[in-house]
Image 1 (cartoon, helix red, strand yellow):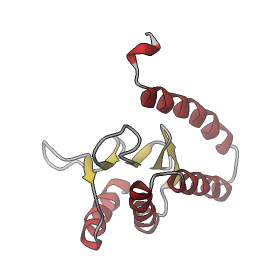
Image 2: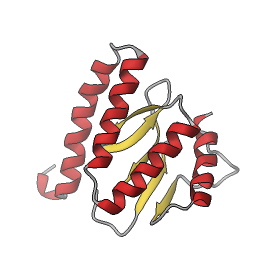
Image 3: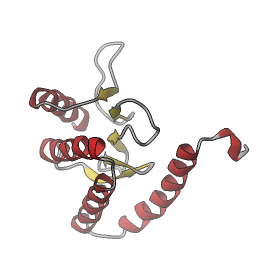
Length: 147
């Protein structure tokens, strides 16, 4: 497929994913503590590089996930802050609005998240601000997803 079929943002995300594959392989050889420390530093660096609005949201999401599901492993996912289960599969991630130049950020869940609830359930939430009530709501989703 030609590069013309992808936006610059999509190409950047694909490059980030390729780099993450290499990082994941090297972290697998490290102790869980070392891998967690590296993942945390990586996520914090990504959040620090975000525009102000995204950075404020990213910091709140980071703190909420770290407190709610400390067993999830911090890492990046297509260059975005993410948290993975013991099998290394991403459970949830924060997509800043600046990533694809859209009007809102999202907090999303991937297939390994245990969110099943009947025939239909949400896997993504648009985020324009985060109140304490919003963080409590998302924390409940993370708690369920991470079990």
